[in-house]
Image 1: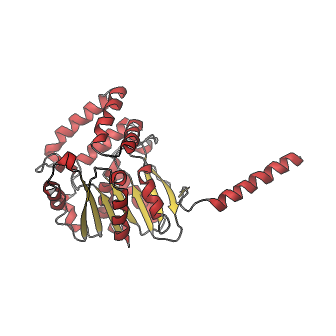
Image 2: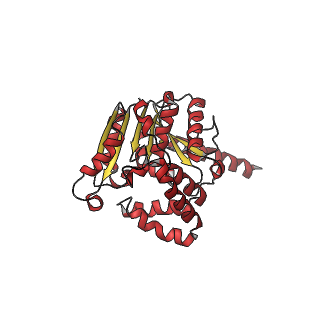
Image 3: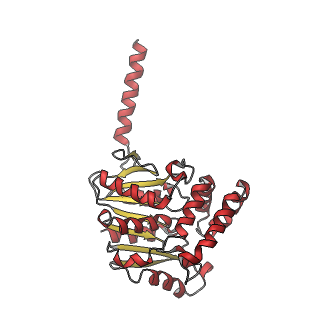
Length: 301
């Protein structure tokens, strides 16, 4: 009995020490609303302004780790992990429309937790941030979009429409769904190298893609391709910072074409600031973390 009491005392003592030394950015689940299409961890400093961070296609919430550490002293962070991506179970994303479902649950999460947040989204997470501000404008106080367009198909064809992209998107769906797992895994390093320069980060991004549920990966990618928010951009009044990358080794010595793509896409949006981040590819948080943080911190203040 004395040994049992001693063990209990020791466990409680260690637990107390861990609580004392727990850093302000340690992960704590938020449970006032339980979403079915994503999970959230609460980090940062309680009582500070709320920031929701949403990763992109097939990404883990870990893409925000470095930025979260920098934001944590001055903000309360809600870091999203989309179900089905980077090894997370597919959950409700296994069926039905994925992106609208996530946006609606983000709205429910914000309302349930009485938030007035800044929302930061990368890639597909940026598109969902736009969708959230479009459908529920009161939910988003400010937003930061990291390399996302209101219609992703513009990257491939400037005159693309939803109708013209749908047949191609369906071919992509069929091919990627039928692709053997080893072939899918083998192609990821090549694809990822075009999206991130940092070689260590390339391994992380590729691993997240490989670990993602294939159906959720493919279906959400097709939804992204077929979502066109260009008609709505002019009515989204939420103050916004857009960060977009430019890498001369991939895109040539003149950034004018890249500038035109992004500026034209958001030309009708009020309250928007566009900032090009040079010497970076799609994952700006890995290729130019200091530049990205400086831009975000300045905008949030």
